[in-house]
Amino acid sequence: MKLQIRFLIYSILFLTYSFSTSFLLLLGEKLKDHRFITLGCGFFLINIAFSFLVLKWTPLLNIVCSFLIAALALFLALKFGDLHLFSQYDAYGVKTALMANAVFSVLLWEIAYQIKSRK
Image (tube, rainbow, N blue to C red):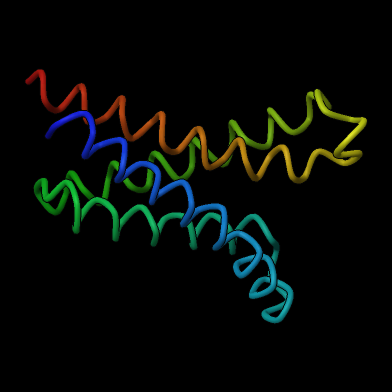
């Protein structure tokens, strides 16, 4: 896959993550569920759709990569939000963690793509 096409696809994935986060948080409030469970499942579904529509690897590899990337990106985003790097703009680190989740997901998908393409 060409670099320009991957960049476009990753940009769409980043925007999907960014815009779906508020919807997933609202859904978690309506379901009276813990927000990390709702976010994790929502991001897992976004990753599943991305992997099946764009990457078209084997189904088991798509599901495993989607789950691992969603879990790892959410974990790293929470740890990144706890650093309080932008405390002047984001007092609680929520916006920082949400943007970090989108960035980490894109980076992890690129790592998975590079590993898969090398084998």
